[in-house]
Picture 1: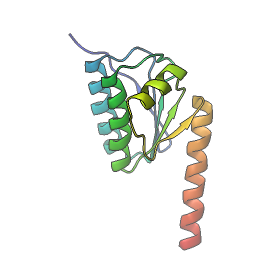
Picture 2 (picture 1 turned 135 degrees about the vertical axis):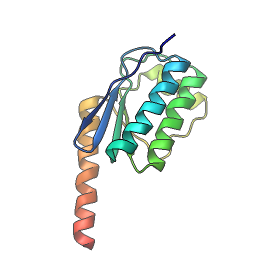
Picture 3 (picture 1 turned 180 degrees about the vertical axis):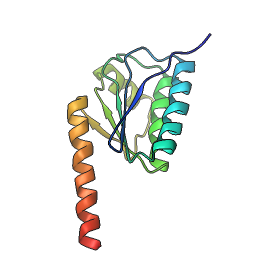
Picture 4 (picture 1 turned 180 degrees about the horizontal axis):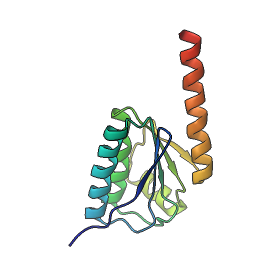
Length: 130
């Protein structure tokens, strides 16, 4: 069975993935592989993962979200999770998953603004030191 692929859009130096379907183990692993490859290929500096349509996660998917965030960070991409439903946030906390370095925003629009603000700060800092 061929697993469903999550579309990953590139806007400037940011990748945006809006997950609109329930993630199953195979599709989550495929998404992780696709996203990491896209970060590498595009040299993206930021990743926004929109989880608005996800209303429940199990422990595997929860761990996969945390792993994707950590791996993206190791590749130099800032991660913003958007649209976390209350049940998903509760599950992530109850599983004890640490989302170190991951920013969150209520929705995709706020996530984009947050990513832009981070880019502006980085630019200002490099201007001040350069």
